[in-house]
Amino acid sequence: MVQADIGIIGGSGLYKMDALTDVEEVTVDTPFGQPSDALICGKLDGTPVAFLARHGRGHRLMPTELPFRANVYAMKSLGVKYLISASAVGSLKEEVKPVDMVIPDQFIDRTKDRVATFFGEGIVAHIAFGDPICKNLAATLGDAVDSLDLAGVTLHRGGTYVCMEGPAFSTKAESHLYRSWGATVIGMTNLTEAKLAREAEIAYATLAMATDYDCWHPDHDNVTVEMVIGNLQKNAVNAQLVIRDVVRRLTANPPDSEAHSALKYAVITPLDTAPEATKDKLKLLLDKYM
Ligand SMILES: CSC[C@H]1O[C@H](OP(=O)(O)O)[C@H](O)[C@@H]1O
Ligand SMILES: Nc1ncnc2[nH]cnc12
Image 1 (cartoon, rainbow, N blue to C red):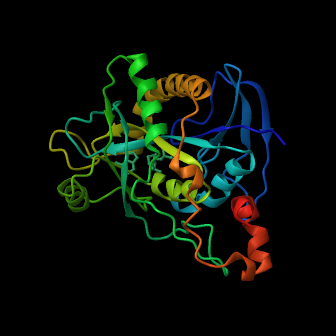
Image 2: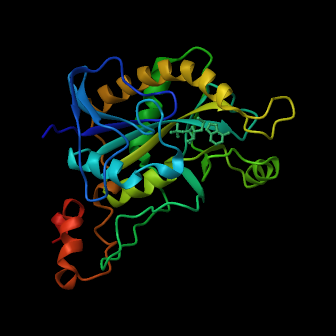
Image 3: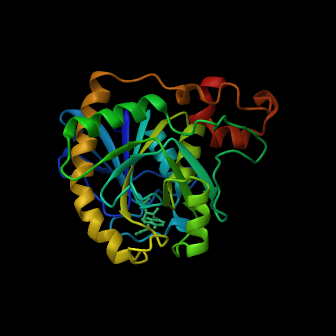
């Protein structure tokens, strides 16, 4: 099986990486079902990476339908240690304008219809999630963005990403509420992925690219898919430059991450008495603790 230390999940507008060489499509089956699509494995400037189109190529899956567990498990099964998400987000702050980049460091959970854990069925784990994003991976990602000096793009390091269920966009009352909470951007995917990545001991960071001002801004139209995609086509070009640069940096200097030992103090169920079937299902995550 192909192996890669670095995984990339491309969101709305980013369905492929043009610079990939030695490309191989890998279909992965997991105990949590099939990922959104085949993993596109290849090399970026010589470094093996695995790319996954979050909504599938052709954008077939809405946020609630995403097989988040299968996606993260599939990355883990290829050996991924660093997972970078590229995502479209609505801006909740005046100073974050469309095409700006945000590297969030916090989330607010407004999802209600998805499973965000690998555990259960006899094995209970509670991961620490106070700092849901890997600080070192986020810093490397920020350095990559800064070094590129992309025209018209301001980088915002840090910020809170509200993860809503969707698929409908927010009401104005909701959008104003999130602003009153001090949130920075809004999307529908990254919190769930970040939780599962942490459970899988994978360092996770998000390159969030603003596409709209959601529906709170008096001088801007309410968000539409047309608006999102229009801006994300510009963002997709920038995102690929950033990803290429961050992969170079991670290859030269793979950072430490607290995520890599996230399960050390998280599993409360004694594994020696836990159900064999669940241990088998979670072997990829728990092997080093058994
Ligand atoms: C097409 S706009 C809404 C859609 O875009 C974002 O997706 P992703 O995070 O995969 O880029 C947002 O979360 C929604 O799923
Ligand atoms: N305004 C918005 N709300 C939720 N998800 C989004 N993705 C892009 N823009 C968004």
